Image (spheres, rainbow, N blue to C red):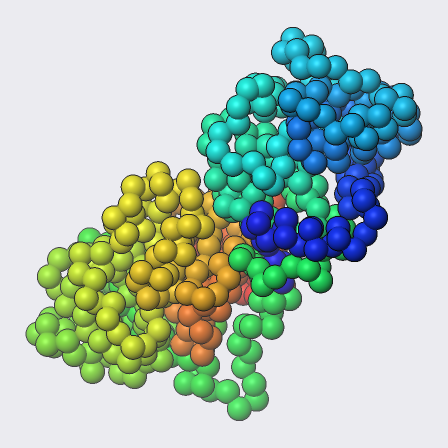
Length: 501
């Protein structure tokens, strides 16, 4: 499992470790690791380190010192290293090391900085470290914008300047790196958008902080973690032991959501899917997924909050395409009054936002909103949620008393008193209608199989992202994939994604 921490947690660990080591040891370790990564990049892009051009952007903090010492190491290998000194002060030892190795340093001048970055093979961002917060001031803001115009590789030192290391918040200009070399431990803001989008690939350099780190604020499951959590049928398994999931979804207007959510559950390995809705979505589900046991809901029974006609289930999925009228509200009340776990998505979230009393239940509840839906649940502007996703998903889990999976470019799973889990799989091709319905079916199947809401939501997001990569032709490796996909493609790719785990 990948663990990530806030700036305060990292600084506290650094202080504890530095108290046991000779002065400068940690910076030396960080600089050595940074230089090694940059040398590897230069060898790959230029064919060698010798003769390559490296530009250092140096601020007043310790990460400016890291960059200077790393630049000195590259200069000793024959790179032409030039530093732009943009801070009110400069790390004296690092500056002396750079000059002694043959590197050059220049006070900040906008035109000279533009020229250096234009011809650089690699730009090292050492402007602002993990202590930075809020919008960048000048000249850092100008330099951050200039990094977006260079043809060279951009490497951020510890965290891209302009990105809040603890939350991923970005206010104003920020460096957009190809690679971030981070020291000691992952910072939460490197895994969560918008900060994650600025970090690029993240390379961790171990400097010995491990024993001094507290419990993490943020975690990310690996493929091994997910494989360990996913249910596997045994010799004695039958469809009931594997989990029966009920799905209340779809309407005469929104029939596709029903087909997609049932498809997600079927392909994710549910022992049985019981689907309940009005006549038209039931007809379409029967046609596409004959495995599902279907029920046309009797409105009179639903209005009396009875779902007895559906049969016994071990978890429910509520909401995709359900509608938001009185009958849909009655279905939501009936489902949420049961004593089994319920996943609420799409129209179900709209109903819950209008009537929070629906969430007063003892059994586990999983909510799967996107930023707009969470905006309605919390009464917070959507742009605020997108700017500070970590803060708002935590608040939602506490305030709503539920496991909350916040969908988006970075999917987050929060539960009170637990670390927020960040999903690391997926592709931009997932941004298409209906993929969230497939996700709800996957998570519902895992809930019915016995996973907790926290684990079911986390594993569903991971598998959903893998399936999207497979469907897009990119395979399960990290990357954007190769082609557009439709939501049903994701459901169909689930068996292959699960095989890789």
